[in-house]
Length: 296
Image (cartoon, rainbow, N blue to C red; front, top):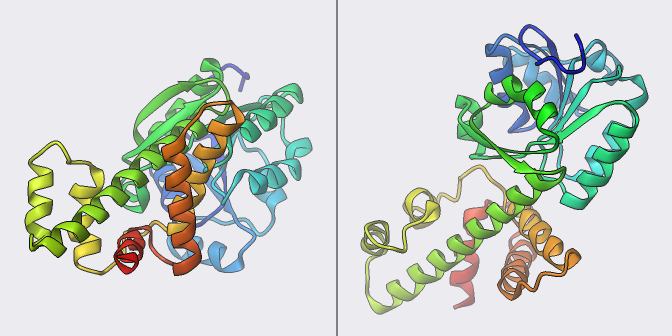
């Protein structure tokens, strides 16, 4: 395969990181006809992937052998860097590395430049949509990097998502993801506060949600989170509060790093970090409503 050709099925794709998102995304690529090999440091994660019908390699060297593309789905950019630095000298020239984690944009840019200088190709392509859309292959994907490299990886990405947004240079995908989650978190916090205020005044929460969804206050949280997880008190959206707090922090840090004043981002970051400290890392992100209600 030439370095400029599209990576089409049945090419081998290695997925490093078999968590709640990695497993279903790998399954989508398998259904699209790719030869997918998974790897995770966790024995339990590899076993679960195998139980669900995937193939998990016992070692990372086995996982990457002959791969046309490496997809990373790991907790943060530092872990991505550590994983890639451990294998980069073993990858063939022209191998495409696709970081689909939620990583810090400037760190992504630095890593990508190093890999490209070493003869590899690199894009960042984080996703939005959660586990449900990872399972059915309808994620929104934000791809940063050279157009030619995104062209090569496009069929891989479309196996997992219904839309691929080309956001700009290296790191811009991760920036767009963090900024999206910041806006989402701000909307969720505002909606949760509105429910608490409305309830105290005597407005039934379900009624207020209906008003919001028929009015200009409507957003993803009012449509998909308030009744389903917050009013019901199930708090089971499947996306951790710790991950949301991390993404908001990433957006806020980026603003400071590039000299943009973002006072609301500072406040939202502080709010979610305080909620994380009080509720703990295993809490669901919709529990921000429980945190805000407790503060009243």
